[in-house]
Length: 93
Image (cartoon, rainbow, N blue to C red; front, side, top):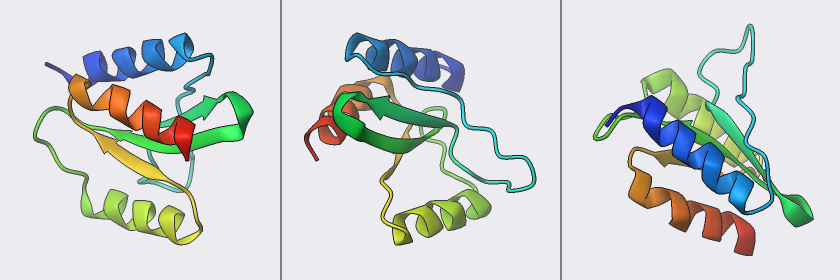
């Protein structure tokens, strides 16, 4: 399974829950998460997507810590089986 397949499943699942999942591009500020999940009722989080068993690079980990320090939720997804749980957590918190 490739990262792109996991990413597409995430986008599709978010749409089924009434949200959008735009790709997040941050020129000049490398290491930011790949996608933002935006769900109804103002629920949102940043998502880093990885191929199965791959880990974020050190710069990505630093950006995740920065975002979490500011109070944002950041998730790393490396398998399709994680998507439902992450979406449920975003919706309920």
